[in-house]
Image (cartoon, rainbow, N blue to C red; front, side, top):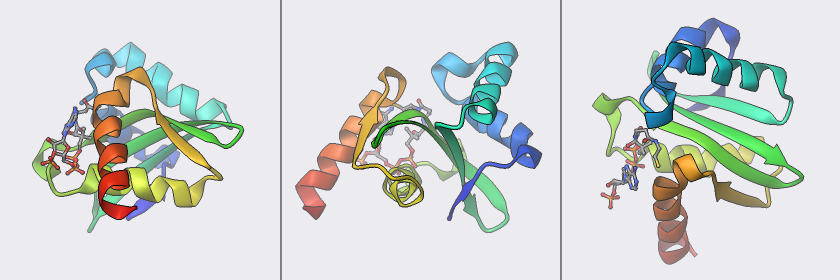
Length: 121
Ligand SMILES: CC(C)(COP(=O)(O)OP(=O)(O)OC[C@H]1O[C@@H](n2cnc3c(N)ncnc32)[C@H](O)[C@@H]1OP(=O)(O)O)[C@@H](O)C(=O)NCCC(=O)NCCS
């Protein structure tokens, strides 16, 4: 289930973000979380499985375009479709007509969006 990030999940969000190659440094992680907290067009969500948060997706919105800035899944839960579900479900929370990848999420997003067109359309 996709839920909006809340401040009381800051540590878990930072832990999930740290799986992204450019988010290894604690200072950068704090800056990234702050970016989501202070900018009304940056939206952070967590994937809740039973009682645990096991995935994260972060989106920057501009007009009706949703730019996926961050996407990560806990290594123990990879390959179960959580990444793809987060991309699909985040659109229900935000008024996006288009979902696009940032450079940092492009390899996975390209795969998700291509597969979606090929299989679901
Ligand atoms: C990318 C990530 C979020 C995928 O999460 P996931 O829940 O395992 O993804 P799903 O189960 O929905 O999809 C798995 C598919 O994505 C592919 N995939 C995983 N990581 C990928 C990547 N970095 N680039 C392209 N494809 C990727 C898998 O090979 C698999 O392919 P298949 O369906 O043909 O078998 C996860 O691997 C992760 O957290 N990686 C580290 C963080 C990161 O690098 N994020 C940016 C990715 S560009």
